[in-house]
Amino acid sequence: MKLSYQDLGQGIFCIDTFYYRPNLDGCYLIQQGDEAALIDTGTSHVAPAVMELLDLRGIRPEQVKYVIPTHVHLDHAGGTGQLMALLPNAQMIIHPMGARHMNHPEKIIAGTIAVYGEEVFKERYGTILPVPEERTIEAEDGFEVSLAGRKLRCIHTLGHARHHFCVWDEQSRGLFTGDTFGISYRELDTDQGPFMFLPSTPIDFDPEAWHDSLNRLTHLNPTQLFLTHFCRVDQPALRAVALHEEIDDYVAIALNAGGEQREQQIREGLTHYYRDRLRQHGSQLSDVEIDEVLGMDIALCAQGLEVWLKRREKQQ
Image 1 (tube, rainbow, N blue to C red):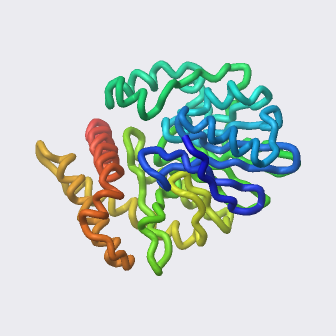
Image 2: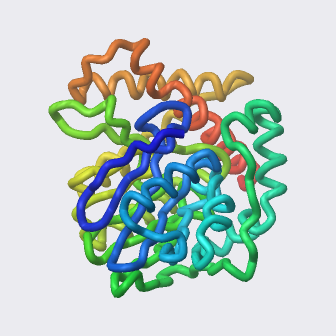
């Protein structure tokens, strides 16, 4: 995989993982003094590009102190094992509910193969290596580490996944948000700024918890967001307002669907919803072009909302 990255200032670099396509998925390098950390890792295919950037930055492998997946979904954490094998002094920092999946990834592997098939799994994700338990730090809510004096704090954020945290960088006043602060593809930017949307992918969508998580994050008064999907976005408070509205809109779309084709109805509802929102946002993309950018995400969001509805029905 070729190296493509952006220098975002203050020792922060976003590496394109080329997951599906360019500018969809990224991982981050933080360089502070003679120490470094990686936040999210992309898939196993990304490890050579990460090592190349370290070399370009004059960072020796043994200087990388931490590898920090925000959660264990494979577009965020699939390359963790490969990087840990290449970075001899690094410790993995992970949500306590995600640690076992990184130490013993057999369940994640089997579940992903069951969805995509073995051939697609190998092509998309490569080999998932386990992370040794003795090199694992389970980060409770508020857990803090120092990177050459630069404080990084893990903040548990329910809503997208139960094993999710975000990372607060006190120096840049930026949040590395994984999926909690939504997705923003650069193809959807307009004169009105970035276009944000929520990834309600299976299986843990929780609207009330997501509202609470966004409130916790905005209470920190961040100045910038470092999204895994994709790169830096400014004006976090403004983005949070739109995402709060979307959570409620997702719930309404899901609750208004019914019958045997409920998931398909949800998918169609989301498709029309985002076409309309993009038009309001000033996008000149055609429906076909919008579907090319958002189609995969909308399908996953519909699946997640269907899972949420079924869980909700069981609890009633």
